[in-house]
Image 1 (spheres, rainbow, N blue to C red):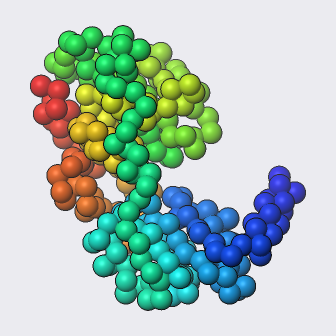
Image 2 (tube, rainbow, N blue to C red; image 1 turned 30 degrees about the vertical axis):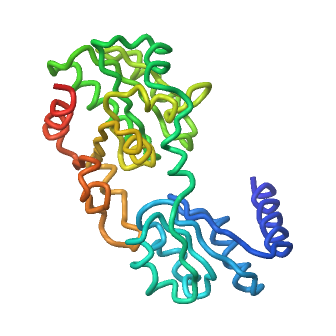
Amino acid sequence: EYAKIEEQEEEIEEKVQEADVVLVGISTPPSEDEIRAASLANALKRPYGFFSDTYGSWKRMDVSAFRTGANFLFVVDADEAAKAASSYTKARIVIGNPEWEEFFYPRFTKKEVREKFKIGDDENLIVCAGGMNALSNIILFGSVIQILHTGTFLKPKVFLCPHPKDEDVHRYRKLAHASMIPAVLITNMPTSTSDLLPGADLVITPGSTIGIEACHLRVPVIEFYTYLGSNALVGYDGSRFSLNWKPARQGAIACSIGNTNELKHLISQVLR
């Protein structure tokens, strides 16, 4: 394991030394490789910058030491650019996320998705996409199954979709098998969570890019955070986690923390 890490470090150092320009991602959770690349580029006087692929990630505390030295910054919209300008004083700030633009062009149509998974016109396809906290995911998936089972919703079929970085998706298999309603575990092969979205009637997720992608397709989204999950989250700037983020303020996404009664109400508003 240590040998692998050392190899990765040497590879990053070699690539930065050879590069004319260094573009650094801003992952969640933070990536040591990204910080290492930014640090090396800064030390070697290589032009470098950051790709802030979602709202507020440019604020992340572990890149704060490199903000004033960055030559460029990619952000998702003009509001983000205006806010970032005072921190990235030297950077040319560019607006837009090409990956988000691709969300408008899904691989499959609604009809193709629903036919593939045998979802009738009188049935509801609910995508429940997890985050990277396994225990919080189990609570989320279980809560959604319980609500859909005890409610008066029209023929729900739930797809449990662990995060692609979740290393042990099989922990959710028993939950899918024990479900009181039809439940399918999606393990990203051969079908990804993104492939399901065009056919979905509702997406429930704890603040993931999948929610943003679903918004592009005009699929209703509920961002639901368990108390456990929200307690583990900290804002990019080190502040306490809150639901005051742009998609929620715009009304594109409905948000709730911990209150399963509120979650049930929100689901009923969509599936009534």
